[in-house]
Length: 410
Image (cartoon, rainbow, N blue to C red; front, side):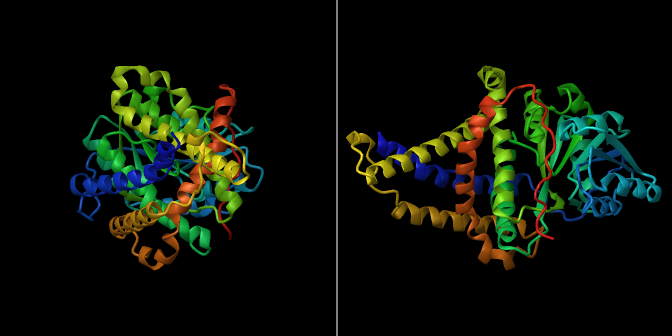
């Protein structure tokens, strides 16, 4: 039995690496448009840009000012000040005097991102909503690329953009550049080919207001409201698209504590969705989303089987007598490890080949980026082990409130 578990632990990352690469290649061939010119949007619909904020005094002014550079001009900005304890509210009020298209919603108590987005959406004038984080710089052409999907395909309920790391001064930040280019981007390309996307990127995602109304807006009790709303939309038969040209420059954690805390939240949110929609997966009408659900459930299983492998090896090293079929004499991967490293390098190459079109500085960061595929699996393993029990034991009606994230080192 242990031989099968051991093989699964080492071959699962290998298999997923090939799937992501193959899916990305198909996306480039059949879904990605080679036209670099921004699409024209003749209908000129109103767009509402929603910017939820909580203690963002260091970055909110840059974010609002950068939004004014959009080449698509028919838009309003709604900033949601969710009980900030710093100067965020004052900065936003000063910016209102300068920009007539900026409105501010102030919440007196911490209600969480899901509640803030819902309140802003209800108050918005736009038919389409673009949500970005308060530390993100939305590329000037992003709204046009996003709107192209909405105006041409009436069943599109959401469009997720292409986040790019902008703080690249530390080793951890440079390594994460590899993650967004060779893992996150490739996964979304592959999932788009399969027809369903696990989640929009919370840092840059657009929605059709009617679609959100149909599914009851964002949930206020989910740790990751972006994952949950993605599943709600797709289970209601709305389509989600990935637009690689919709760039958004983001800040990432630059400390081990910060990145671990961020990924733990992501993992808990994913596991909450896994638990919440389990009964929905028993219905034949939802069969098209089964592959996403099965893949995520399999990744959770992989984490626990890897933990089991380490525990059995450790017990064997201590001389604890175990049944013959449960003995793990070594955790060194041998030739499978060499093979896995080769696939990681190939995956990195494919990712850079596709994403260099949007970010020509990637090649300079290759010496740091090569480490991320291995680190990605380690972080996934550790956070999932902790997050699954947290999601399982969480009270359903607990309000998911803000916590100030690690915005990187100034």
